[in-house]
Length: 333
Image (tube, rainbow, N blue to C red; front, side, top):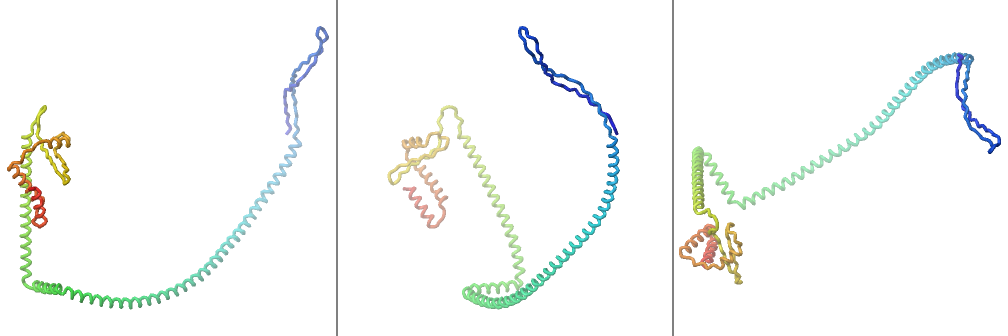
């Protein structure tokens, strides 16, 4: 189909102009550079009749080719499907035939191996049965020999034990005969009744003993509480609430010993309430001139000492008597 197209463009053209001017004071020429633009309009008429006819003819040819290609494609698809079915069937049949052949071959090989292994196992089983039979016979002979040996040893050992401990076995035999004689008489019922009554009596005695021990324990507890109350009362009576500088008395134990080398050692034992240092206290006590003990104090000290010795070293054996004698000797000296 023919058509017309119109195009408009603006064209720019650079122009250089040289101008000569006459001679005057100064003559010469001058060049001027300018750009000239012009709008150009072009109208083009395109005749497409021959092209359209050729395109129509080509379209007819292409439609015929398309129909031919479609028919050929259909035929080719049918042929490809048939050939594919044939090829697939051939491949599947060949695959299963190969698998069946391979399985048959493996089955034959495995049957041969299994038969050979079963034959070997039967031979080994027969050999093991023969060995077991021989071992059972050997064990029976060895067992019988050792049983006879151990039986002889047991009999000999029993005879030797009876010979060594003949008095003991005789005593046991006599006791067994006496117990059998007692158990097979009418005194058994009497012994049972006596045992029952003795058990009941023993239980009552044990209960009475427990009550007696409990009463003693309660009395001791009561005495302890009474003693504790008296001690606390005594402490309250002897303790004074002092204010300011006052004098107080505190118990102090002063020991002075002399060793074989004439070395004198001093030691003081005092309660924590005494703030004086131990060395200063020992020095002060060493300077004090203690009076001699009176007869009453000596008797009290000796009584207390004897009570402590009897409590710490008790017993009537030779060792205890010797220890007490040595302690008394050292105390008197």
